[in-house]
Length: 59
Image 1 (cartoon, helix red, strand yellow):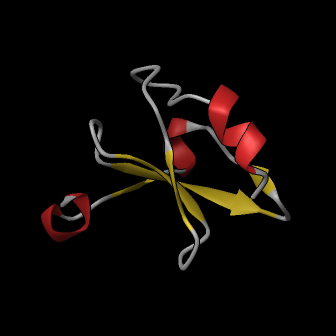
Image 2 (tube, rainbow, N blue to C red):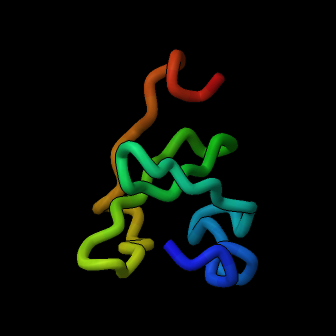
């Protein structure tokens, strides 16, 4: 994931900052408790494609 891209992308739901989870290859919005997948190097920032984070993952 290009870190320059992280500076400009935002959560499509709350417009907040996204964090990159390298292990799971996802962009994380802790506020909305959503994890957006990255497929073939492209973030899929579509809410129905995101998975809901468990309370343990939000910490």
